[in-house]
Image 1 (tube, rainbow, N blue to C red):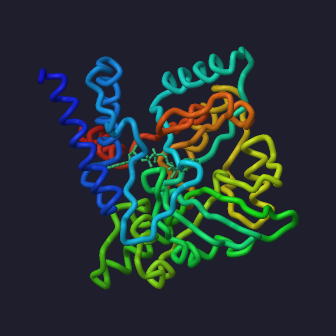
Image 2: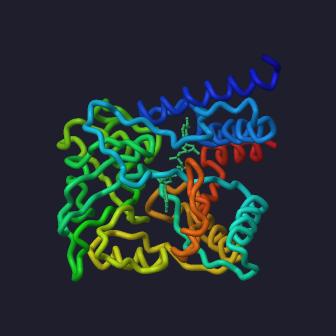
Length: 332
Ligand code: NAD
């Protein structure tokens, strides 16, 4: 094995270890930015040396672990992850790829959303009733967390409004708003309970409790950001943005910060705007997500193994890193 191959193997093993800490124990030992850097390095090495790429590499699959202690749920439509970009150049490259694949020179319309830092869940409603909820797990198999999700007050147990679909799977993020997270950690310190590293781990740890009574005590919230399976009789709106408004009319919470914009310029403005108000938002975010808005265009673009080609997450600089950077600047 040469030097590059051993670096690739080492990166893979390191990322697998970090995945276990993050997804299985909800206790990461390194900041997300460090994980993202290693992932980027591995992707670059695999792109340069595809002959040494392992089919089971963390770059090729949706990371996540479905605990056997919960019942398992097979996702009828896989729950994928998102590709990331970290700067304007990479974002523009994404925009160009989208236009090329759509064979268009016209600016594409995107739906922009905050990237909530929590846990992806799938919630199935039949005849308007919440019948099942699951984690993303590895994208194909998730954990049955129906009883826990039922305890989250903002999630309707029964859909309201007219023309409720016979069957609809709502996807979105369960998260712990900043105020609840801070309150919870303060109380935990006083009581000597476990303190959460960040709102993401707090949400994941709270949701994956075997006793729903414990989840019920945690200040969790939810925003819908997608639709999975739906019965054949239901005609959904033809844009992502319109679909989110459609979910709202049934009483499902959708983030107020979502916007439709045109082209990469519109996406960049949205990114700058949300980054500027990040601290003032009542929930933690780790970036923004851009989704090609027209469903017909999404279908044309399709998916790769772990993520759709029609969406990208533009990650913000990690807050841990910002703190460190600020310290350095201060010392200089
Ligand atoms: P991701 O978090 O980068 O992106 C996909 C997820 O974004 C979705 O599953 C969904 O839960 C979420 N999301 C939030 N808002 C959304 C919106 N509006 N629309 C669609 N999805 C939205 O991908 P991932 O595979 O869940 O996690 C990978 C990331 O997790 C890494 O980039 C890293 O930052 C972090 N991680 C860290 C460690 C560590 O040790 N620190 C380990 C593993 C993963």
